[in-house]
Image 1 (tube, rainbow, N blue to C red):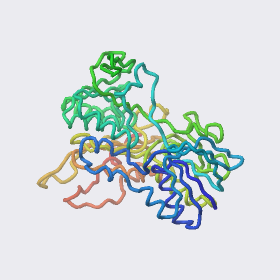
Image 2 (image 1 turned 120 degrees about the vertical axis):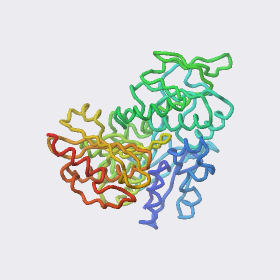
Image 3 (image 1 turned 90 degrees about the vertical axis):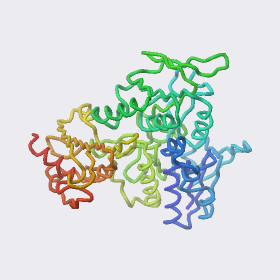
Image 4 (image 1 turned 120 degrees about the horizontal axis):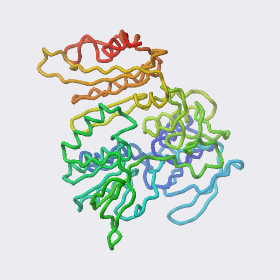
Length: 446
């Protein structure tokens, strides 16, 4: 069995490692256009601000490791065309410019995603950078060293993490986003209000609800000012973080895709083409809270999807159980995480929803120290099913959202959540767990 894998970041790496584990005799070839694999882009901000000292720590696999497993690992090789009818790929060696044609029995598409680049005047200037891969992280670090004023465009997770990292490095930071709040997709207003205050308290200038219209450049072609629909901001370096799109131009006319260009896969990671699989940021995924197929580019989703490809590469064996889009972030002293739908999404989806917000200390007040947490759950008033949740505290209580993710996965109701068996021990919690308290509070909301 000849298997070709296109792309080898999270999904591709997981697929290859598990294919060789389950099918050691399979002939596996990887084509990757970069010179590295398995880069953890979520660690870029930690690398930028110096928390991560060794850049090698941001990789969990290497081309050499794959080659030791018997994988034909072709780095700096870009697949230019796929002939699905003939089961062939056409590849260019980016070092020699030589082109080759290779055949497959099974094809795995793991081409990932790429930052969105809006058509803004001046965006292709040398000091306007992207934040996605290892090359980008090194460019950001190198160029940030000698500048004082930095502008981050996009206040999603990557943008806010970079804004904090630059501020910690003593930079003058402006954070711009067209949405009315930072982390608009992940958290409701009571949570983003606290996060925004943390940024303001640390001197980060927030330009929220502003859309970038142009980058003003000097005679050397360097951007010196960011112009929005509401103001102008002097800068020496700009980092674009407005989101990602599936990197699927290669297969756009060969397999079925959704309106965003993400490859549509079934629960076995199979595309519309027989013997062709897709996984990771280039593919769709089933979102359990709203029972719909969506595009959710997360590393956690990618490694699970890549692992499932290996399990199903010969025949359909193990189904994907869907995702809740669970995520977490650390902003200064605040530990924040979320899962499932926010109240904002519930409104957009016209769900007859209810919410409960619980504020309580994580441990009994007779303990020497304790910390207040704010927990919110969103539920369906008709079915009583839990749809989502968010938590914020100084102490790390983010694992609470992992627990709630399982509750959503299993379609638990708020009534069931009230009486779930959670242990009590004063060093760790109270007799009524925070999730129990949320369930209790929801019992009388009809």
